[in-house]
Length: 260
Image (cartoon, rainbow, N blue to C red; front, side, top):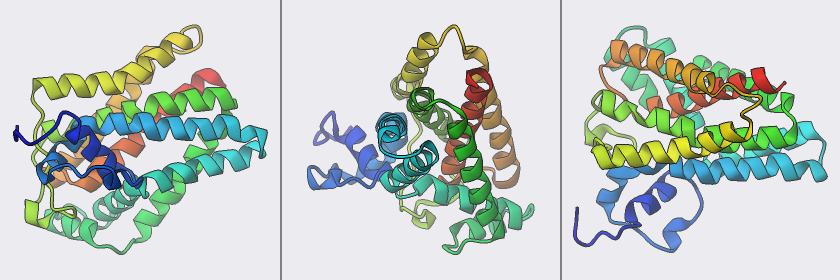
C-alpha cells in the first residue's frame, strides 16, 4: 500500500466513484485508491439502500404509495447518477446487437448512444422494480431494499475475481482497471454484503426462507457470468452494473414471493 494512503481513502474513493454526492469536496483520495473501489461497493449500498428505504417508508406520510415508489427509484438514480442503469442499458445493447462478435459487443457497449435493446431493458427493469416494490407494504419494502442493495453489489463484485478485464486501462470508460481482491478484501466485501441481509432475514425469520433469498440471486449471477465469459472472455464496468441490478431484482422478486 502507498504509505501516503490513509485507512479511509479506499472506502472514500468508493463513495466518490459510485455516488454523485460531493464527497470529493471533503477529501480526494490518491488516484490508485480507485482501483480498489469494488472492495467497498457494498458499503455504498448501505447508503443508497438506506436512503431509498427511508423514502419508501416515510414518503407514505406525504404522498400516495405509487408516487412514493417512483420517488424512491428516482432518488436512488440521482444518488448514483444512474451509473448502474447506464451499465444495464449498454450491456443489453452490446449483447443484444453484437451477436457473438467480441469486438462488436465491446464497441457497442462503449458507444454513448442507447439502442433498442437498451431502451427495452431499462423499461422492463423499472417496470418490474416498481411492481415488486409496490406489492410490498412500505416497511417491508424499505427493509428489503436496505438489505438487498449491498448484497447485490457484493455478488456483482465477485466478477472481478472470476475473469480478467475485457479491455485495457486506456480503453476503459473511467480509465481505471479494478485490482483483484486479496483474502482480506474478499472477507471485508462479504461482511459488507451479508451483514444487512443476515439482520433482515433474522428479523423476518418467520416469513422468509433465507436460503432461497441467497440462492436465486446467486444463480442469476452465475448464469450471467457464464454468458459474459462465453462472449467476452472478460468483464467490463457495464457488466458489473448489469449484474448488480439484475441480481438485486431477482432478490426483490424472491422476497415478494414470501411477503405478499
